[in-house]
Image (cartoon, rainbow, N blue to C red; front, side):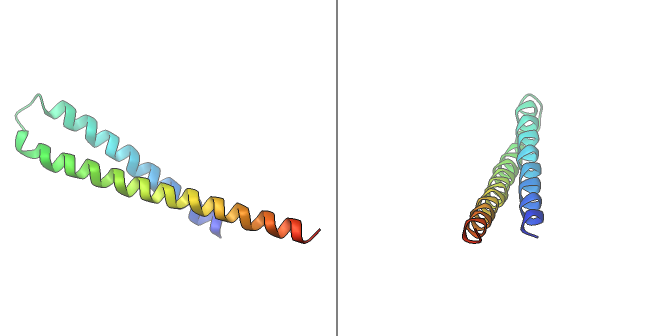
Length: 79
C-alpha cells in the first residue's frame, strides 16, 4: 500500500516539476512578445508548481526511505 502512495506522490510531483519547467520556458519566450502584463502571472504559476512538485516528490522520497527502514528492521528481527 505504501508503495502505491510513494509512486503516486513522486509521479505527481514529477509532473508538477515538468509543468513548472514548461511554464518557465514559455515565460522566457513570451518576453519577446507583447504580453508583458501576463508575465507576473506566469512567474507566479511557475514558482507555485515548482514548490508543489518539490514537496510532493520529497514526500514520496521520504515515504520510500521510511518504508525501507521498517522492512529492513522486520527482516533482521525475524532471523
